[in-house]
Image (cartoon, rainbow, N blue to C red):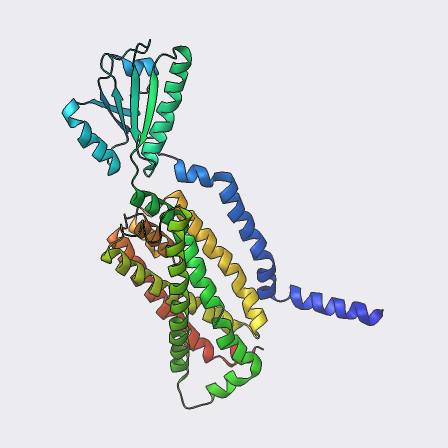
Length: 378
């Protein structure tokens, strides 16, 4: 029995004196709490909230005098413009293009007290957050009014286009799925290439060859990047083919909105992100002495990628400096590309920054290869 407790104490002592194992054990729980808190506590609000200082653009036709007061609209939040009948189609087009929020078309001589054929057509676009919010606000006010005088009807007309719906869906879940796929693809092969060779003892043999250690580091990162890009592209292909079906559409519908430039930006972000991720995992794997240990150290990073990707659902990225944050910059760029509103500067900055980080980590990896303490695992 004494020997049993000696073994227990030895294993616990080894664990609590190894910071890497402690981080690998406790960090996933912390990150899971953060992820589920974001999802449960404010994800919907983040996706649908509108800036409190935002002024809704509302266009009306045949509106009765004083209708805004009748409905209780706050003048500070609504910019109301009365239009002529010949401008109606132009305003509908603006709502489709997401440059206007709401359009109310009243029947001629409309009165809130009702009458034969009295009604209001409400035009909005669910693909625009502000338009959807404006429709919800006004819809609630109209419902209250109808309860008092249920003698007029309302006809909601959603002018959302299929491409806009696809772009909105892609921009919400695309960054998280793509980066997770890329990270998972890298994590499935990188630890074996470095930590696996250290564990088998073949890594030390390679380092005593005449080949410079920085060349070995670069060769490993490049070969791992090629394999990871192939894995990531296969995963992304599955994503692009499955999301339209999830929307109830035919394969490929909704993808036509993306042009050649969008795909080129996407390719740049994917490749630069893979190079960065491979460099990160390679550095972490070099610190480990076995594949199992490397996998346990890389695991929490996967959750970190998920957290940074989810943060894009809450907005952000309005300044170029946000694109200096690794991983988060890729998520922001992907979100912009999928939503058909990618800032070119942000995409360029993300791509360049990812490549710079990858180079710096490659230099760090070469320096680590020069450290006998790290290579020997002592």
